Image (cartoon, rainbow, N blue to C red; front, side, top):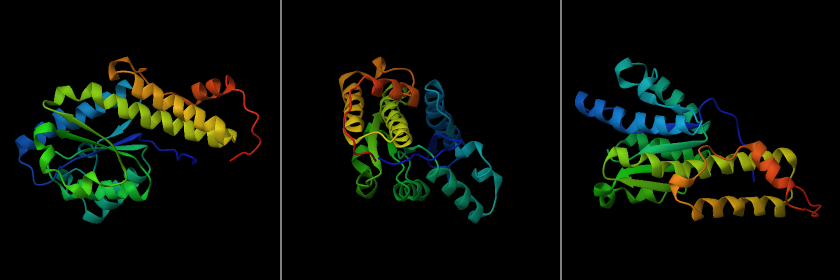
Length: 214
């Protein structure tokens, strides 16, 4: 269990931006990236979209500044949602940045492209889930489940660290979260991740005589 770092952006949206036709750029930004942003907003999460930032290819800023800006956003975020339906070296680099910073990564990809995905990406330890879809409007609800888990777990880790909870108490609540996510359909999940205050209230309901603290 580790202390979470604060970030302006909860989710970093990773996906191909360079070397796309204007039509493909418009499609992928509107149909994929901005749908992810909408899902995040519906859950009370902020989403950083590079195509809306100064690092978008249309701005023409120095390459070193692009790297620095995106690196800082990746490693300080709570999770990465990476669309890998369009191969891009930058996406692979951002996934590896996330791994080195212990930032969980959720992959997005069309089912029809699944067999051609890089094994190096799929095997990266940072990957916590992959959401497959046929049409972009199909991934919005399924994406909520891994986001709910990642940010509920992040809040649990944070409050457990702050309150110096015992290992048994933490493990019990961690299991509650796992059971909640595995036992319900994504449509029945709470609208927002479990907050630190909600975890704190749940912890009060569990007797804990263990004296060894974190």
